[in-house]
Length: 112
Image (cartoon, rainbow, N blue to C red; front, side):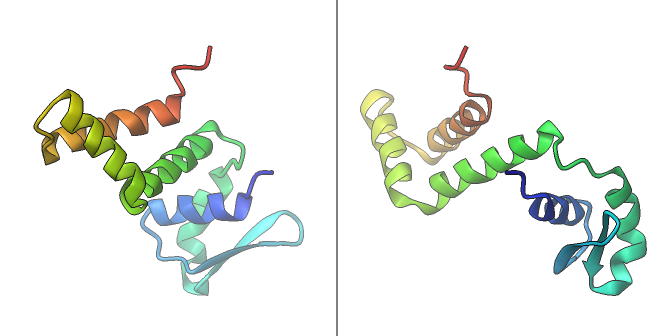
């Protein structure tokens, strides 16, 4: 199920609006908090499509970044593979591998 609220909030924040909340209102509209941001948010809200493919891509990227940056086991595995097959492992090599992993995770090149 699409989480339209989270997707809209992420789109508003990506546009530089410091919203602290978004909620649907009767009739299909959206309300943002703080109230003072509603006029600036409205054009983004009007153009918002919760089913746009870009949302899923952004969600996948955020998911894999969390795994690589916050879960030590994944980072340790990448580091160990680099050190084993491209020794010595370096921060530069790790960053390059991390970026390739993010792109692969987003695009799933192994799926026909």
